[in-house]
Image (cartoon, rainbow, N blue to C red):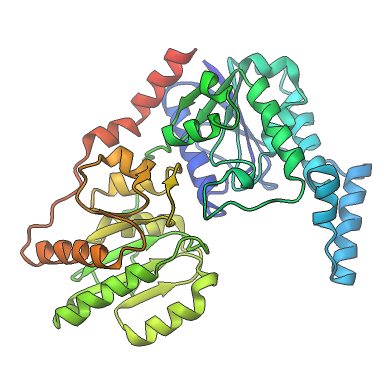
Length: 411
């Protein structure tokens, strides 16, 4: 089977979305499929055993000149006109030029007679999907992967907000749902959520979860702030505005107040960008020496190595009625095989996969319950009774063999 993949980026250090995309691409190749990747990373990147083609940006055309003029105007005047442009056209001039650039490269792949064309993207960008709408001859082979809700006004609270050009963006996504022969989602809840807005996704959709990938971390030196002899709780990931760590920190603080030896025996690591909470975190760091905050992008392999060595990994989501997302770090936490403290809505994909009877779950703002869960984990650690996650069912669900069966059954 030949699969043509069109993707925004294959730079694993630029976002969690790129990490998830690369893991999927590599596992498709490991299934024995012949994979060719067209990527818009804007630099040469190779993946072992996979043909990767960097898509060049089209230059010196009308859209390119408009986009550069807009940037120059903003730089000189400090006035952004991007919202006005998107309100009028739906997307920026840069987006349209990027889409045309991607479409041009897709049309050149006549030497690769693919059985499937898979579009992947990241963050709020669906440029590969927009580009493939312009190549209708490939629509019967098209699988549109939808990694997050789109547009933003279809996000569940508290994430939902109105984007400039929201109506055009909604029409764009309806076209995807109507033209892609297949659609794919990282979670069952996300397929159901998006299918409530674009009903065709319920007919064409399959679930392809984020993948476990084989990455060696033996050569990685663990950072000095990590004390392997201590009971260590780790949250690795972006602390966005809607993803508050305050209840977690306060619950941890209660552990320190109740158990005097915990000052020397424990640490809480928060790794990843946290600009919205920077002032609060600095205040807590001054009060709690065992709270370690790395407000930056920590290298991917370093995070993977830590996840395997800490006592407990944490998945932190927003306070909401539903979380249809499958966190990108979920496969990493499963394969790390450490106990998993899940702070998510009752109705979340993470909780659905772990099971309704999973012990270490709480709403993200329930300080008292989080304290009780950390206490339970801490005392088990002290008594040398802290069990590993041991979820072979999830390892299978996120594995290459499951992925291969899914594609073979589909095609």
